[in-house]
Image 1 (cartoon, one colour):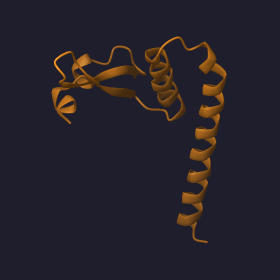
Image 2 (image 1 turned 180 degrees about the vertical axis):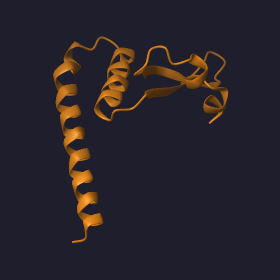
Image 3 (image 1 turned 135 degrees about the vertical axis):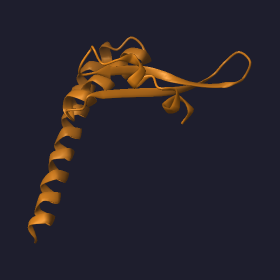
Length: 96
């Protein structure tokens, strides 16, 4: 096995361990979740913390009263609370 393959294998194991830890934590807090929004907020926070990210967003699609599809961020967590809103609520991201 080459050094590169060994590093990839170690990274894959580390990611698998992080996934397992997040699922275990989720199973503990899930009974106390009172709404989908709280669950998504917890998930975004866990992703930021577990993967050392600066920002995580969870977007959901809805059908409004006029039967039009609307997609909006349902949960946003930024490591730095002073991160300017225009960086994570960019219209080009909304368009995607």
